[in-house]
Image (cartoon, rainbow, N blue to C red):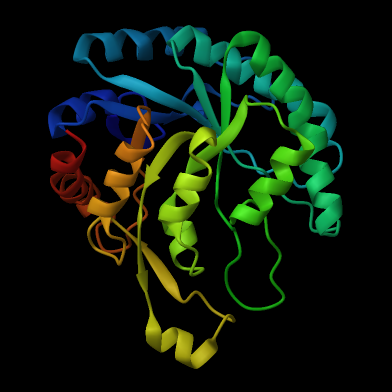
Length: 280
């Protein structure tokens, strides 16, 4: 496995090397807006050269656009083609993505909304030997009524997705933190969907019992932490990745409110200290 962190700047390749990582996951926004036009080839070339210089691999190019309206069906193929172009230029084979959600549609309608967008995108990816990996972010927060921006937070949804669009070009960016707070067995889910896991996020979950007591589901009953500072058993999780034969990228998605601001890099270091001995 290649161990890195998610970032919006390809200049963080130098940081990755300095902190001991071997990879990064890079947001496509580092090169421009794929919804508006082609990504910047000059910056893409700079990023590739920087990665080669420091021996840092870009394990995935993240295009986290949450589609929310019907017209997004028509624009999806062109948008993802632009990101695929950038990925190929970088030598990256995985594009990480969000499923999106149209709050004006019911559940069945949203499943079709997903399939209508990513069925054609999968065909393009197949021809180019690329994979699209959806982060399993539930995107439900705060007080009722909840209005999601994204779907795909549980195994039942994944089964429905892959039944509607069975292409093996479509898979998961597996993040155990989003399963843990729901009470879903993330290790079981990892093993059940092992053939669809194309990238991995390392993010921990700290449960907040007092908030749960006071508000139940009508508040955020958890907060995300750097790996090792929440409730997930990372030795168990990394062992499960080894057991399924996973060889792809694993990236810290740093959303820890304690190690933020001036302490952001400290959070990355603390995550590295915990996970690197397990991954090596």
